[in-house]
Length: 187
Image (cartoon, rainbow, N blue to C red; front, side, top):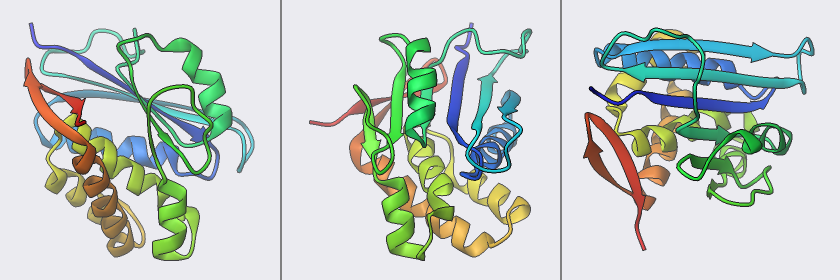
């Protein structure tokens, strides 16, 4: 039976967590995968807890909630504190080293890079999705198609995604396992 992959993207309102989850889910669907995407966010327009959960499988998905977290992508320290206790030793933790003080995982300066490249932190979510895409082995062209179709400022968002993809590609060497790519950190 093909393996199911469970992804949680977490941050705070205003970081584009929900949009990032929708983009990633649609890109997996374009690859022919079965996908369920759910989201949760606080009532605050900015600053409240926000998360997007994505389940990807070659088979039918019979339950819309995460049973476990295979990949946790965290964009804010408060989200790390909230969701890190729910992971296990098998979970791949990826975090924004600009904003998260993590105990373990792979940190990337998503926000710092966004500010340096674009003069604003607004593109950190697409940089993060780029890094995660490289680690998951998802075809980057599929993500770019979704970004161009669904996002305002598509050109900048595609550029941000490509920057993140290169970040993720530099630190991982994908190995295909049951139709799902698992990253191994290069020494």
